[in-house]
Length: 265
Image (tube, rainbow, N blue to C red; front, side, top):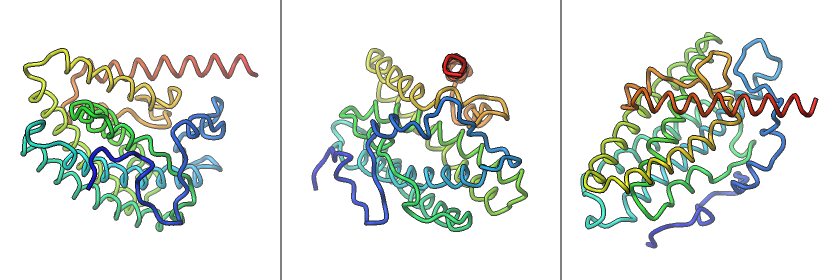
């Protein structure tokens, strides 16, 4: 079996509709600067918004499973410790369970597989030739984003008095905390003698974090479309300064988005 599998080679059946990352970020519909994407139960559009979010979680978990599997397979033990391979195999088990849970939640919410598109952005971050960059971009940045998304959806389920959604999101949230912590631990261990490599990997993480601030729609306020879950990020091993930096990037993006809205209104 080949190593370093490109995103275009990911196997999907006819139900899935794949788009590129460029198409995802060029699409004016999800990227409309004036669009309200909050999970507010009083909104007339919240049902479609939540279903789109849940379908995004579903395809994201598939790619997280594929990304962890590739990292376990792509690198020999001369490049990464065997114990890291075992941790990635365990993460594959978690992600497979998340896919099953997401399928159940999609059905619970009235969503069909392929109703919304799938971009391969998450898996692309898992294609870096340096395993340390994969840990930074996937396990810290994107699994950190998953902490924020699952917290938002869990709270949404609580607002709806929906115990199925609340329990499922809370269950997956707990796993994501361990995935981030594991990635942070291995990043520190592998780069303990190479501070420059660690710095470059963390710079890559910041790039991914900035990309997924969604125009400042991620923040610490309950009014944010995606809640920055400081408490759970701390449990996952993020330093206060790191969380502050993500919050500052998101706020800067939010202000820039508001300026753009004002300029076009």
